Image (cartoon, rainbow, N blue to C red; front, top):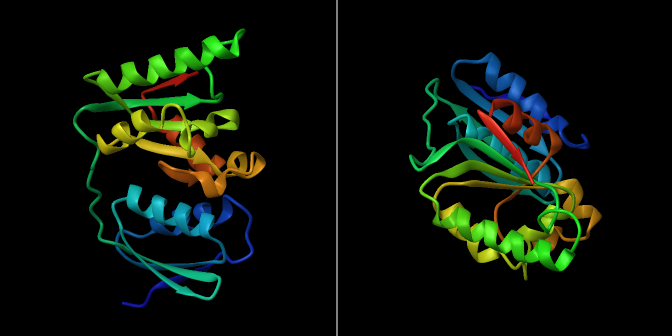
Length: 194
């Protein structure tokens, strides 16, 4: 079976994901290859394919990637039974307004409580200053790793990581884009914003 080719080289985020998603939704099964020229696009297209229950293989040639996707027609749900369809949107490294010192204590306490909870969210989205929590030396890194290990999706905004010059310091979860952030929020049963 010949793969459909999507040439997304040179396209700005989130166009590689959007173009790939359109093709995958249009076919019941088959092969799609998306050509991209950066790691963020490679990772975002791979995450999309995984979220749709597709198989993924990646080939690299120089600074370009071929993301080979195989859709089998049946989507399997891999969400941990301990999660529910809740999305957390975290936009700051501290919790609340006022004292940053108190906000840091509150965020640590919140994340600890979340780890200890029987029910955890399906997804945690980090934007703006919140991306600092997913990077090396984060005071809540251990908690986020525990949540990831329980099946919670951890996503950090790539634009935000770039703005704060933290992309190479990401220590848990994946880099994402505004399209995926919106899709996760729109599909959620409940969105909690911190």
